[in-house]
Image 1: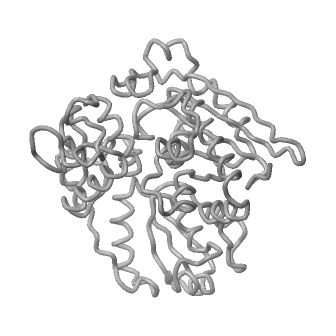
Image 2: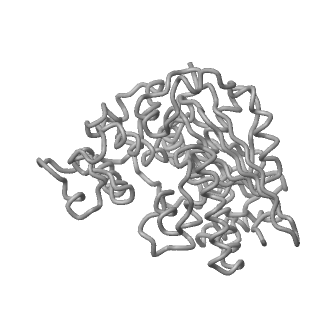
Image 3: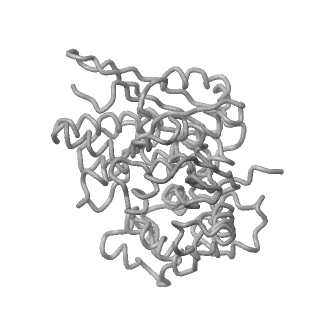
Length: 397
């Protein structure tokens, strides 16, 4: 069987929450697949519970089935870190909503003063690229659409097996060239300009901050910001340049500098200040999107609350989601997530009515408004849907 990389590591984690900087891993599952050439691929599986050192919230226990009693005798992450490195070494790291799993592992290794780095392929993004007409691409939708196995759903090894089954289904149903082209585009493999040093991207961290592109003189050509500096800078030099600006920058750039910031809000503010003071040639108009608000979750059954960002201490940002430029943008985001994840409009605060919400009436809500789904389960699914918007933990005391 032909694969889009010689070695693949399908990874899934279960955790105590959605904030990689504040929450902890409770289970790791890895399915490693190595190309067998003319023989079938070699497949090895491994999983372990992990003692997170903190209680697991009840709603997470309800979703995963992993309880405090189960993880109490399990090893701490420090005891399994070496095994994770061994089983992912040299392999393409594959996960669904990969930023979540990869981010948790990077934070867990960083707490041990160790580094975890891998090339990452997100199967959610891969599904979107291969099946643009499909309405949803969450893991449950992939399982239903491709008739994938469901044994062990919401457990780490079970979900990792689903991803391997998904890739096998792709190679069964689609031309290999189509899959590999889509994977390459998702990976955004950079093609660095020849005038840049080969290690220019390696020096960039996979964390929030601002980056500055310089030409032959002392003034920057361009200032940008990102949640992931290495990924964003690499995207400027992808083989299919996103814009004419990227193409011109590729011709003119000679070196890259960067500054790390404490989360996306810090990056937004720092980018604004640098653009106003340095007036880079390719920043024709400053994007004046001020981070004005965040979402925070209340008790299960209560709608998310929109709170002004400027009144929150940096150390208290963890556990919130955003930033959003307005309350309307936050509501639009919730409405979009409700559509994609069958969330309840009433519990999201999008409408007020007794009985079934509008989405339930058109079979687009799992039924929290009528008791078909518990408030705890809905809260856990909402937190999972909001995970890509989680504000990173403030790294300073």
